[in-house]
Length: 222
Image (cartoon, rainbow, N blue to C red; front, side):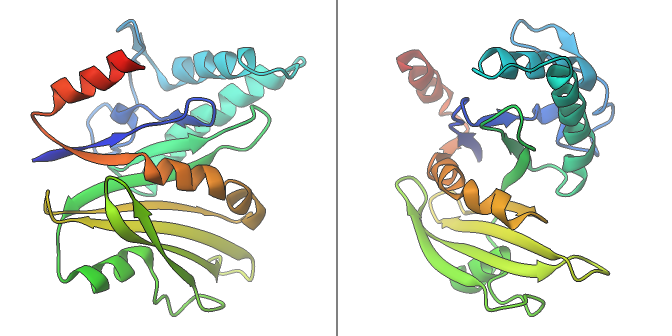
């Protein structure tokens, strides 16, 4: 068995607590725990995180900045897990004034041959795309060669554009396929974050279940 290890850059990313990313988890909307182990509701987590984001920023939040970000983060917790239940979710937020961009990551057992599986996961052959998707090889040190696909489609029942960005890899070592997904009705938001998203993709690792000691050693080295 294996587990996902994602090395988030805390200057760019916020991780939605795992308890709230599985909407099928009984009580998932109730509590999580902060770094001290104290229980938190989504609203409490959002308020604390918003305060931390602004404290780490050189920008003046004004009278409403902290409250607005807290409300936005709470809405992210309540909304985004419904799109891909059970996926880990990182919010790209390099500036507390920006709209958080969700990036979803998960892994699952290998199914089918490698090339068609990666193309399916990245929607490389999406017939609904408004132009041919941009398909590129994307290699990381830990996951090896995969695919990155950027594509444009239209919103359901609308002519508005939706940009989608997907990455996929196959780990023969762990018999797992991995996928990372983001999408937005604001193409500029995704394109401006592309370098940071690539960096996040390169940080993803699969670890064996008994690799906790290695993980702890990495933490001690930071």
